[in-house]
Image (cartoon, rainbow, N blue to C red):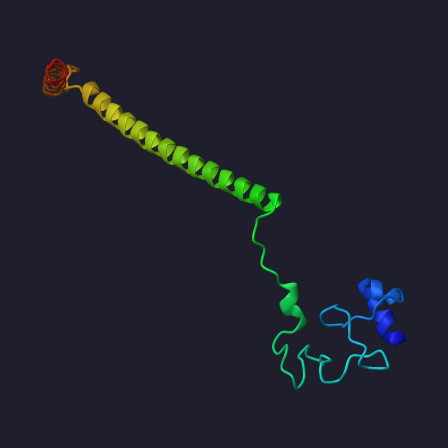
Length: 152
C-alpha cells in the first residue's frame, strides 16, 4: 500500500495524501470489497495494461485514454496554419516574379542579339569602302513594312 501511495505521489494524485483510494487504471474510487486496500485481482490490470478475466479493457489499456482526439484547433495551431499559408503564398509570388524576370532577360538577350546582327550587316563595306547597298535597302524595306503594319 505504501509503494502504491508513493507511486501516486509521483503521479500527483490526491489519493496519495490519504484520500479515497483509487484504481490505478481509471483513477476512479475503488470499491471496499477488498479489505487490504488493493483492487481485486480479477479487475486489476496486468503488465500490459489489460484487464483479466472480465475482458473490460483488452488492447492498449491506459494509452487509449490518454489519446483523446481534439475537436477544436488551438489558437497556436490556427496561427501556425496561417503563417504556413502566408509563406506558401509568398513563395509562389517569388517564383512567379523570378520566372517573369527570367523571361524578360531572355527577351532582352534576343533583342540585343538582333541589334548586334543588324549593326554588323550595316557596317559591312565593299573593297573600295562603300556601304553594301543590299543590306541598306533591306533595312529600309523592313522599316517601311513595320510602319505600314503599325499604321493600320
